[in-house]
Image (cartoon, rainbow, N blue to C red; front, side, top):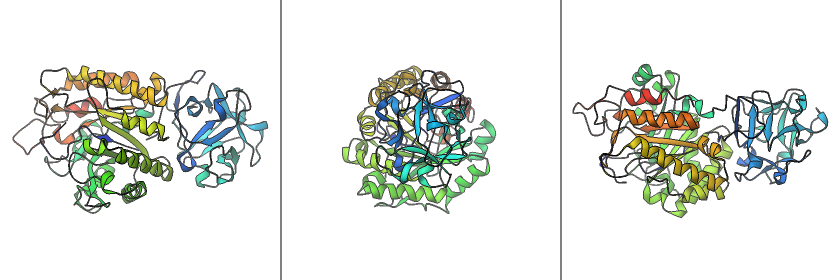
Length: 456
């Protein structure tokens, strides 16, 4: 998927750090969200042995994508798995009372509040869900304990918001690039469309393992910092994108998963991020060593940053993406929040890009279902689409009508991410610099206005 301009976001692996959400389980309440609950060392809250019998232990365990780690957080205060409720043994309010699975009774020992500070609190006891002895070993029991703010009491859980983790305004975040293309003022786009989040591209290596914008602009204090300030002043935020089509990739330049995780962390710390996006172009993507390094680095980053959001976006064919990275992540216990595809550069003009996008997305759904053992609904809720507006470098035309087709599909299936390359291009062409416009007849921000309607 070669490009005629620098640093496009096509055929890439884009990893943006979010809460993984899945489909509703049987006997789940209305207004609920389902997915993994991750805690200490990035491990998952797990029902021992996937046993649904009353009294089964609830524990910490490597994330494996099974139903024993799919929890439904309901607006009724319950947290459910395998059709039963997270319960405090013996209706106890004492420190050290163990958590277990039990038939849902409506009792106070089965009520939980997930706080913005990433605590899971039992209001009856006024105590926090806690990993016994601060142990990250597989099988470490979950219990309640007086809330301390320690890492063994911090959890990344699905939000009970009508099943709509994707309804976060973060779900729609068009790419914005400051390196060329007469970059637009994000405040102008926000004022015209209501979209407040932007995927800011690209963070690259400066030659080794030090992150900089385009590998040359300062991480903070320059034009990219000014863009971040503008977006935040408008009530939104940015998702830095690591990678792109050309330049030195951190994923290839860093010599180990530990070094790569440290490079990601440097950017996270610089901006106090809620999300990251990682783009790995074709050669790096196809390298198994780089794939594993990236997976391992992301596991470290997720463990060290509870609540950080992660998307993975990969190039795709018309029938779906290559599955090597998806399978590697699943087998390594990396559960991310959205696997997104970039459904363009299929080759040739005259194709219905809306229909082809849906076709490719169905292939992604099947890949996630097979790798993680998800239901169709869970797979859809762990998916994203990152399109391209206007004329692509393969001379395809993605129209505003195609965006409406994509929007309808996303709404139907509650996708976790809906974005496109790029905000720079969402304007009619008037003889400006390369890739500063869409190449089709449109008004400013027409494509953004379509995706702005997404509610999840």
